[in-house]
Length: 352
Image 1 (cartoon, rainbow, N blue to C red):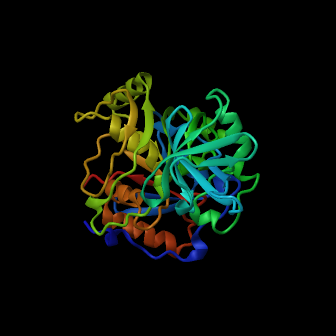
Image 2 (cartoon, one colour):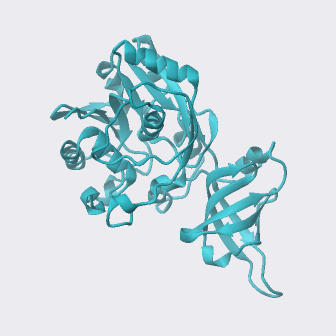
Image 3 (cartoon, rainbow, N blue to C red):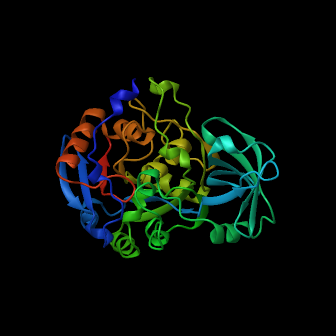
């Protein structure tokens, strides 16, 4: 398949720079069978059934954007400002990161970040990626990071406005619990505590897994053939208890509803060929494209994704290419808001 098959034109003004408030007022496009209906998040309870299991990603976004200074290489030389976005934790105090301008750093450089953090460049790779080791103890690293860093808004928002105090609340799910993501699982941003209580009150179950979303989620596919794209990996965990609950639901004929593509990636990583689930803990680099045979979820709630992105390829696979192209055409024509702070769709799996 060609990457160009997953391209579309989106008017600039459809990119949401802030979320809709209240959350329940955001639009929700229900894609089912060969049709679709315009709803809102507030109408979600009517679209789900008692016994459905809503699978949620409880990762918490960390303040992964850092601004530091590389000292002069020789006396009288310039101090160079280096912008860092943490990407993935490799071990205690060691992170994979993207640095700008990458050409101004070298192995062994020390980058001073505020008053509490210093990062040593261990290695460099292509595309501005580098490996960093931070000073100090691991026990208080996250506290120091909270004081030094800012919320890592996606590039399509960060280039239009700086992060502000509201993003600390907006760019985090109501149920975020496990530190480690550098991007939000955005479908879950639509779900307030009140909405989750309403769903549980109507008999919908909730189950939590963790997938630490990396900055690689925003990287476009640049290869001509999608098969040649090097898929990024992300760390995730599904506990034995959650696997047991999902297996029970499956055996009883109840539906599994994935909230977000991140949840779905981990579900598909943990599912066995026979459709049952096993506990999982580790990295996954699963790359889902049209033609993939899904075994885990029956429905997917997700936001609208970037052209030529791996997430758009995933939703084409889940909902059917032709059906999802029609859905995106409809969403653009009817003024849906796109990307992380935008509206959502609820997709029933293509059974064709």
